[in-house]
Amino acid sequence: MIRKLVLVFIALFAIQSYAQETTASPYSFYGIGTLKFKGSVENTSMGGLSIYKDSIHINFRNPATYGGNNLESFNNESRPVKFTIGGSHTSTKLKSNTSSDRVKSSTFDYVALSIPLGKLGFGFGLLPYTSVGYRLDTNNDAGNLDTRFNGEGGLNKAFLSFGYQITDGLSAGIDANYNFGNIQNNTIEFNYNSDGELLQTQSREENRSDLSGLNLNFGLHYQGMISDKLELQSAFTYSPSSNITSTNERSFSNVLVDIATGSEIAPTSEYSQTIEADLAAAGLDKTDLKLPSRISFGAGLGAPRKWFAGIEYTTQNTSEFSNVLYENTGSTFVDGSTLSLGGFYIPQYNSFSSYWKRVVYRAGLRFENTGLQVQNQTIKEFGISFGVGIPVGTIRNPFSNANFGFELGKRGTTEANLIQENFLKFKLSLSLNDRWFEKRKFN
Image (cartoon, rainbow, N blue to C red; front, side, top):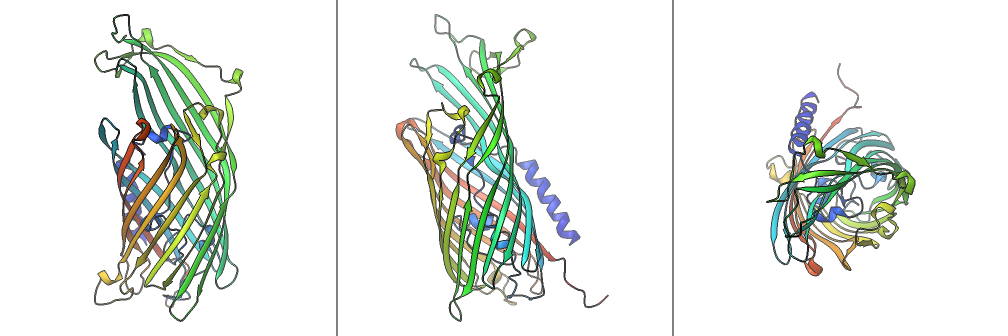
């Protein structure tokens, strides 16, 4: 167990050291950023499918999966504590009607611990939920640099989950999430003299919103054999809408720019004065931001420890999103939805002769309407994913594994002078599990 914890700390340090940027999407300009978390590596490798419950992986999307032992495949007395950590790297090609560029981003995705206590189970962890990271330049009618937008930050979730096995096949659960984070953005509107030359002194507006609040997520999960070899699994989750508090600051300052490039340079003391905006007078120093409600349901069939295939549909009332600070961005929000199809295959989970027969092979498809509309264009997302789960335990104690996932997809469109993102994501997670509550036979 000590060696596994050492590996965890090494992996955590490596991921945090490497993850300098969280996203590089121009669509994170709108609202509170793009949705960062779409499930564990195991989920996203199956197109985002999150209806499957097993004994060695944590399912973040449905708290009902924490309930019950679910270890009939190994040892009914075994109760492994599950620990997982994950990270990802994304390479994105940004494409418009006139040009293209390539950006990269890396991030820590989640860390969590799950502890079974008979029919009851609970877990807790931390994950980034939305992410903001963009730099957008617009030109005036003369083709010169007009406005520059920069932003960073996002919303995180610290969660505590409980699940309980009501009957042999039915479990229920609840997530309590504490949302926190901040969004920082600044805008420079470039001014020119009468000869059309860029002025060296420009004005910059800076905004910061500190976010915090609670929300809940409820879940049900059913698992049962419908024949001697065929198993049915189905799931339902519901997250009611909730409000989080946004504490806002705004300031204005003069900055020096490089006349040749328009890039900011270190200001002298003459230009370092900052003026704080009086948001309190406008009632904008503290506002409520409404997070939309969300419902998902799905079902699938499979042979236990052999294969599984399922479908899941999620609808989110994104049109409920509201905050007065984000109403004048040239965008609107409509209800969003996601359709996921995917599954896995294991050649022979208990093979002694071949290591690769114990590997889990995953694949899936994802079709998503993000709920964001820009220039009357609905921003959609598509992804096709693949992944493998590699055992790092033994036949006797087969609880730990490393999971690798790849997703190839696109977001957005080049219509109406918008940007299309073609992305390739590489994901890695470690599920390091062990029997913490097993009675020793020998002292």
